[in-house]
Length: 170
View 1 (cartoon, rainbow, N blue to C red):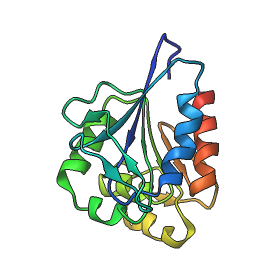
View 2: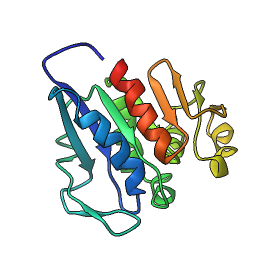
View 3: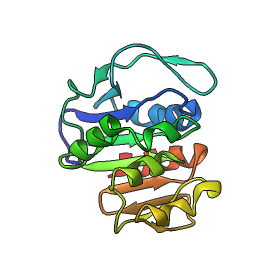
View 4: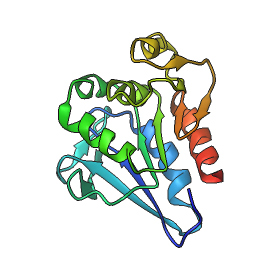
């Protein structure tokens, strides 16, 4: 990310996401010295329920999403439907063309992989899903946080905080 007045960060939120995958990284990045404009992005602006039924209200839709310096995809049980969701995968591909960093926490990396955004990249995810990374074109790495060029993946929940700290350092 370039130093500028404002850094634009987007979190893809979706039904069934693990709220800790989202809120840990969000807490770090939203506190970026008042420089971060953090968007919660989904198909529409209706509230989205996390896996533990905590509601989050999107602040932007896919269509209205501004240029992002970083886009983060959390994980959780709600990831499975996204793996074949053309609208979600298309949005991620479009953002990957211009965003400074494309990131994930836990099984959010599987969504990046399904969009073709981890082909040729080293990546990590939750240990139970680690073998799926190779099937999606990534080179699986057993580390908490993996930064490979403009892709940053975190193994799960607390490593999402570590990923956000590494990203903030960039």
